[in-house]
Image (tube, rainbow, N blue to C red):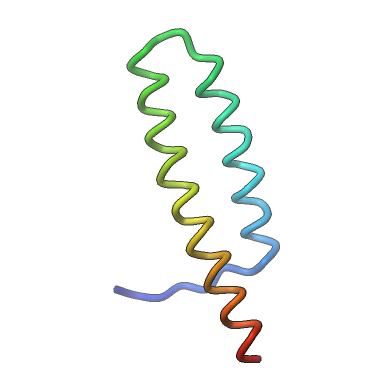
Length: 62
């Protein structure tokens, strides 16, 4: 797996995007669209969590 660097500012932007995506998912009436948005939100939250951990670990080393 190739590693990429995500800055703390980018992590913050991804967190805000996740909040917006979550609000969108909650507002959707179509169950299929809602389920798809919730799945995308889950992936986004996973990426954010991993990026956050990587940045914290990197900060502890530096």
